[in-house]
Length: 132
Image (cartoon, rainbow, N blue to C red; front, side):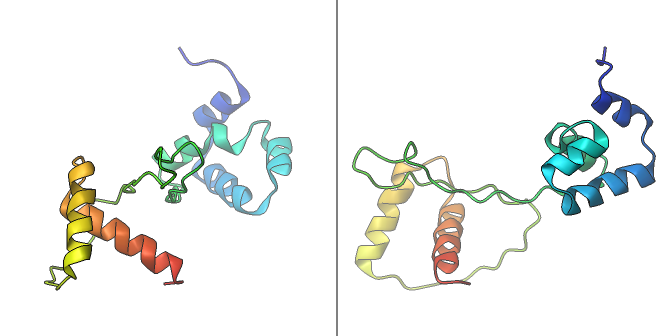
């Protein structure tokens, strides 16, 4: 049984226009103004707005913290989740032997990821680093 909160009342009674206004207000109001207007925080309703198709969650970019480091101080390698419907292209490339060996070691140490996901993450990180 759902609790009778202000957030739940909005979920149960809001019209399409009210949902759209709520999402638009999230983009324009401060957190405090939003809470004053609606009586609840954006975070308490965001998933509902996304589930109903009124809001698309922004992809979170991985940013290592001090707790996400290896004992040697290097960053923990992490592959961000990607949508399944991304268009893929197949390319053949030549790698320097040293880079290939290091890539093989990375793949061996991170067996939960595919070869393709590792390469895509490495290239994505490098391109972002250089502003692309």
